[in-house]
Length: 410
DNA sequence: TTATCGTTGTGTGA
DNA sequence: TCACACAACGATAA
Image 1 (cartoon, chains in turn brown, green, purple):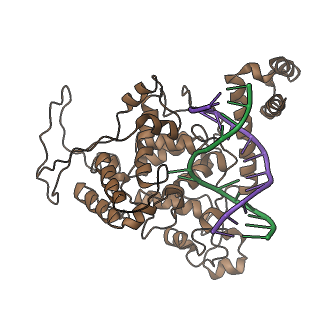
Image 2 (image 1 turned 90 degrees about the horizontal axis):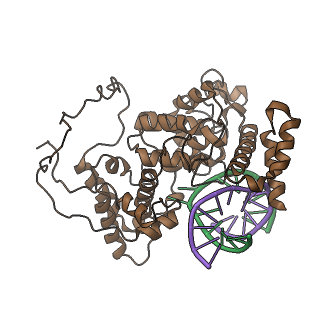
């Protein structure tokens, strides 16, 4: 028996069987959380046995049993010099962590995911149990059951989708849709994914990946990702929106790959599902709602403590400039020992103009996809006339957008 | 065909 | 803290 491990509980990786839900829904996965909940119903009870040692491995069929690979074998190189993430692995730690969270019944009863503080890092605003769920250290059904126990002991408690149980159901939602959607992890050939002509700009992508966008809020989050392998859900939203539909207009698959590599809770279905969501490629389509890389973080952490912790170069920047250090007068930059453009980068894009351009391009991509899916509504005769008059280029995307707006208004 | 509604936007004004 | 405008999408249920 491995040292430090005290109990083993049977693990249910998901609450439901995705295939069963798809079957109940007439062979198609439900595409909204609401319809998913309606079909799924109540999750089954977990198996409650405990073992004092690991159960024997059953028949592995054609597969060979190998020892657990080392970190180096997984391609992560020498990590001894890197900052150690503050999270320990294993089932014992998972159960301890779950117990610690659930002991605060008021916190559990009032939990609302969207109201969490993404800048909280000393004491994160969520349970941080996702890595344990991902690695099978914690059973989803067992966790769900334990939360229900807490709910039974209080008068009022929040409900899905925002509640703690709601978060486990989101997990199953993405498992179900991903299971029932061919090419779920890519844009091409993925029927539920908007086809969007993302830009190819390696320089901007690398700046985002390597925490050099010049937006402290964005860069701090990417540093936390690299050092800890975890950041708050809303912090993930900020950087995912920034990379894709918000500012840089870079393909969500590129960001997905970075998250998959660096997150300690990266999970194929959930990671891809959330990138589809944030890039407005699927599930969520309100592309006008763009997170500001300046004001979003500021409303939680006006002093910029989160930025100061993860970006030491900015630690002495006065609070009025911490989210926009390029606006600080040179004398202030000198005093803070942080010259913008030298000690910390200038912004790679201007958020005001970049987000405006992104909205425009998203509008064009959406209009174009509406034409593809339902050409009869798109005035095809006008379209072909336009195509001829513009030669090989055809109708520009923005003219398609205007055309669509007009035809819908009629 | 139409109406409703959706985990987590921002900026403004009271 | 709240309501509202902004400008507007699509899946689903009616």
